Length: 128
Length: 130
Image (cartoon, each protein chain N blue to C red):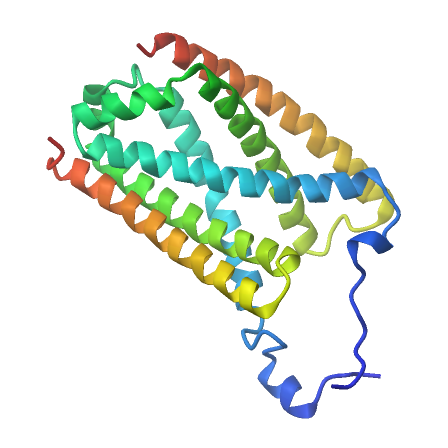
């Protein structure tokens, strides 16, 4: 016996009205993060020093800047999708849940934008 | 609303170690989100100049931060291994009970080996840092 309505079957969107979009983006970002995160850890730990000059020289390399931006954005997206599920599972009450989800989304947008801004600022030579 | 089947809840399941590997993936994921916050804080400090970075470094190089970095390294290694296990599951493979129990131990083994490797490299990098 199927509990799905004919319209529900056609739309395939489920109770969240999003279909498999959330699930699929979580997988897509996971696959992307396997090489990106390994690159990030190896690259960070290969730095000769963590003083300003060394870090700036590292971030000003075009490929480093590009991969850092991709890494920060993919991490932010993946984190937002993951934390969202945790909130949906453990925060009860429509009001509290909505406020938490909105805060989580705003916080992640801020983190993602700040990360990209910081990398671009250094990469374009604008860091003092 | 028509009565709908309720998906099994935490308290319904009998404890199994495979359950630990699942909840750990979630814990480490949330932990790594905090790590992302630290990373972006550091990147913003670098972008704000040598003075700002030196100020941030005072916080980021506190002795207690060594524990935070160790925890982040452990979380990263575990989440990476367990995440790859999930991606394999998504292809429909390895879902039998015996296979899932084997892969649980495999994930624990691989992530501990990774933790030791990354931890050693991080310790070397920390020793190089001022």
